[in-house]
Length: 237
Figure 1 (cartoon, rainbow, N blue to C red):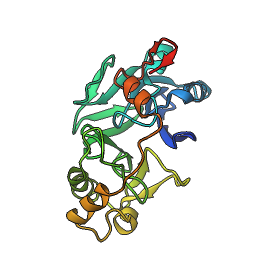
Figure 2: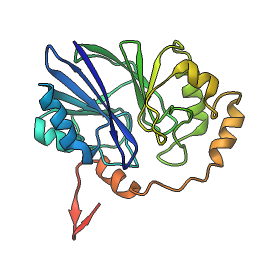
Figure 3: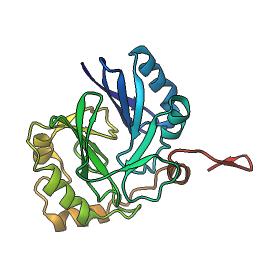
Figure 4: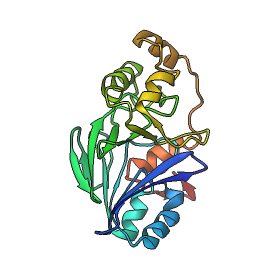
């Protein structure tokens, strides 16, 4: 029996997704958060699951992934989207890859723009884990990690918005407590895209003037090593 859980980290407003099969006991975690590793292990234990993989939608700048710590504890494999300079991982996910994991089919869809290496995961043609490429009534920023508003606009409008309207949208973040949307809803109501052409979108994104994430330096440093945290002279980097 398929298992799907949406888990939340309050500090970073990050959603982690558990995908599993109650019959085989096989499980994967997408976008785990370091501070929530104990929670994730408890859920795995309670449901009688064995973690096979952690997968990332992208290299995160606002939190440290729990992938490295989970591998230490469970012997799972760490997978990240292809192209980023990330060490100490076990493999890459490439555009179009199909995975039958935990009794469910995952299709990897390259969705660059928020970062230059970003994947969305389509589960059984029904649920779309969008990472930061498409949020509920928003989208990820494009002003660092080789982001590009032009590329993100093309990604969302030509790849994600061409999926069936009833495809459920599960983002990596939400800051207002929203949990799920749909492609149809976002096409109609997302203020970043609805009624905007490419030039409008680029102008909007280039003038957001957002502060950088508070944990950006530590997160990017650790996530470049699959989430391995290094301590130097009593300072965590």
